Image 1 (cartoon, protein in one colour):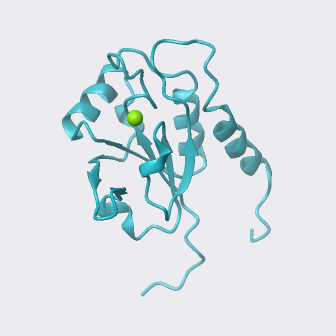
Image 2 (spheres, protein in one colour; image 1 turned 180 degrees about the horizontal axis):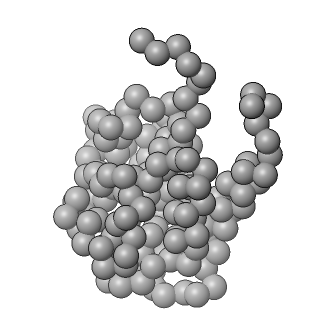
Image 3 (cartoon, helix red, strand yellow; image 1 turned 45 degrees about the vertical axis):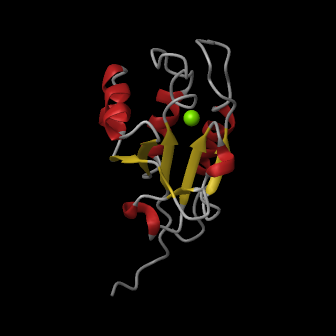
Length: 147
Ligand SMILES: [Mg+2]
């Protein structure tokens, strides 16, 4: 057993269709996705992607848009007994899971939820990820009292 400081690393878990890319044909990345991915990594957190369309679909979309190198792992979205998506095994034990999703109602109740409007088609003015990005920037600017 380790007895070090509390686990503050966040596991960010992104939905694919309607969240990272448009839900029409997945050909368009939502504005600020890359900026948010970079900020999450700079803060020392991990990025996961999961999709009800399956792992292969998620990988295809990430490769298509040059996003795969940001992502630690890709998972299937599988419904649990309560009808909500079950966290992938890799994330079940993590105390700090942040889910970004355009259909937040089915997210596991134990996670921090960042809901976004469904990204239906290309929209360069979409700013739904801006609050999450600003929140990371604020926290990065606040020195930890433990250091
Ligand atoms: Mg979706």
